[in-house]
Length: 191
Image 1: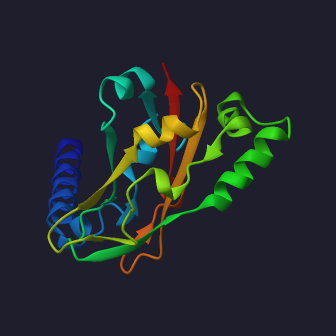
Image 2: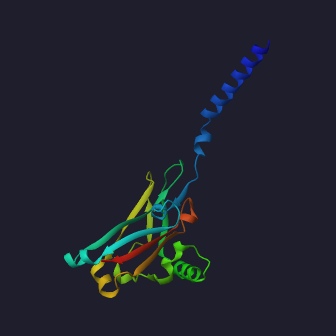
Image 3: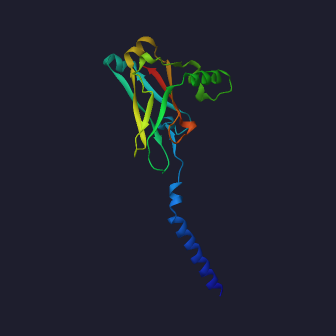
């Protein structure tokens, strides 16, 4: 009798598992649909920095050299892939806040770059679009940040750190993953 009851319990558990696995609502809600900047995860999520190193030697060898890097957005989750647009802005306020925090004395060493780093002026890179749109059926959208290396080295010295806080805002669909909505492009000028 004991074996028979255990057998019935086993069958019941298997049926519950099969029913729950076939329930379409379970698959529909798997994973949140969040929009974020993949570049903000480059350092394993420890900060939102995208580090670029520019070399004066490379510019000397080819004065027309420009550095190009991808910036973009990605939508997580398994929901239907529908069109979504976000604003793409240079949020210099975040740089001011980081600088105040870094100079306050209680900041971790990862904030040291903000003590001497300066905002990269818009004349040193090609204009970025005001908006990025993920098209129907797709998961991501990208654009290119193109830096004018010769002009940068003509106006900044070797060792200087330039910062460009690129942020996404105001999604037309889905929700922002706020902790990954800002990519701080950190440009270090080297030999």
